Structure formats: structure tokens, C-alpha cells
Image 1 (cartoon, rainbow over the protein chains, first blue to last red):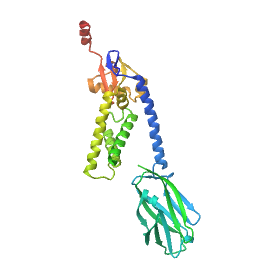
Image 2 (image 1 turned 90 degrees about the horizontal axis):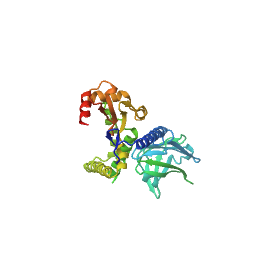
Image 3 (image 1 turned 60 degrees about the vertical axis):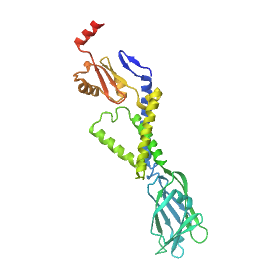
Image 4 (image 1 turned 120 degrees about the vertical axis):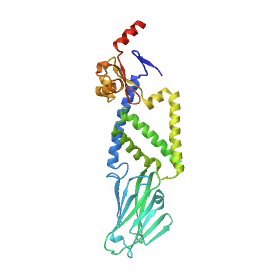
Length: 171
Length: 159
């Protein structure tokens, strides 16, 4: 290190470095503001840009979070049209890859049965009034980081309808 | 493995953050600075500890933090540029009694801070009694007063 005396004062002053470090600091402040704005906007977790909905023509609508945080509970809301109710029951499948990323904490209302069907878990819910839309709430907790796809399947006899969406889990 | 990565991430993040904030931030410990530090440690704690309440987790975290600190101090000893980036450099803000305004503005220090340091360290009354003021790497301001009249006389005789 160059010990440059400043007129008798023995001090390691380095003005060139000091200037660079100030520039770095100013850049850092800008980054901090960007982080704050992103957090408020919901790019770093729950917020306006994170809440999203995917609608499938067959009578399925899924509300989910695009951006979630590790081990922070979030809700997945599944809306089913009355037209998709069969035999006073609604059957919803959650993709196994999806469940590998987020584990299901609670389901409201509680399902009548849960079956493991190959690549998915199928939840069957009893429906009291088949002429009303059905709302199902899954509280999920992300357990794996990074980018992944979520798939919610509506089974109604013939061809199942699938709502697929991408999501990102932050550490 | 998780705990080690968490500790490294938190250490790096805080190191970067405090460098970005500049020397003066939390440098002079006022009561509120102290409270802010406590809140920051509280906020960071959950992210670092995670959901591990075990003794092993605590030991691993502390050992990791200590080793990073030890490692960085060795790096700083051998690489001068790393030391400058990690700790910054001291900055002369009053030179031969003349306050260097642009440096003080950029370092977010004012004449009042210099005078406060002069009063506390040397019992000086006026800025003109200050020969040098240096914003140290720690964020403190150090003061070198002008030699007293008798001292100048003695220095002259020695020289």
C-alpha cells in the first residue's frame, strides 16, 4: 500500500480509489431503490405483479402467485363453474412435479378423498349445490427454489382441462 | 450445508450493504443507530437461522461466520486492494485548517461534525484551531489540532 503523506500527515489517502468507491456507492443506492420498488410491485413475493389468474375454457379458473418465497405459505384458489360439477362432486388434480415444489398445507373445504393417480394427486370435493360455482382454497408452502411449472387439472368425465402456469420461488 | 450457505449469503449481503451505505452510516452510534442495528439483526436472523432450532445449526452458523471473518482478515493482510474495497480508505476533510467542501459533501459530513469531533477529542472551540480532520475508515472523524504557540517555538529550536 502506498503510504502517501499529506503534507506531513502520514496517511494512506487514495483519492482515485475514494472517487471510484463513491461511484460504487451511488450505484448501490440505485440498486437498493430498485429492490424496494420491485418488492412493492410484487416481483420479489406476494404483490400486484405476483398475483395472477389463469382461466381455462372448460370452467376452471386458478388464482396463484407467480413469485413466491421459500417456506412462506401462499394460497392457490381454484374456481370451478357449475357446468363442470359431475354427480355432486368436483375432482381436481394437482401435478406431482408441482407438489414436489410446493407442499399442500391445508385444503378448504376438506376433500372427500385424495387419490394418487399416476402423475398427480386427485382431490375429490363434495358439492352441496350443483348450480353454484365452487371455490377451493389450497394453502401451499414452497419447498424448492427456482423456476417451475404448476399444473391444476379439472376432471369432468371426458377430457380433463389443465391450467398450467409458470412460477418462481425465491430463497 | 444449508446453514453454511445461508451464513455466507448473509455475511456477503451485509458487507456489501454497509459498504454501499458509506462510512458514516451507523458510524456515530446515536441511540437510534443502536436501535436500527438491533432491528437489522432481528430482520436478518430469520433468514439466516431458517427453521433450524438445533444446537448444531447454531454452532455451524457461528463457526461459518467466524471463519469468513478470519479468512477476510487474512485476505486483507495479503491483498491491499481487497482491504481497500472491504474497508475503504481514510479521507482528509480538513487540510491545514481549510475545510475541503466537495469531499465533505460527497462523504456526507459537514463542518458541524468536524467541530463536534474537535470538541469531544481535544476541547477545541473553533474550526481554525483544527489543522487536520480525517474521516477514518471506521467512520469516525479524527482531529489533529495546530500545535500550541509554545510547541511551535520548541519545534523550531529542535530544527
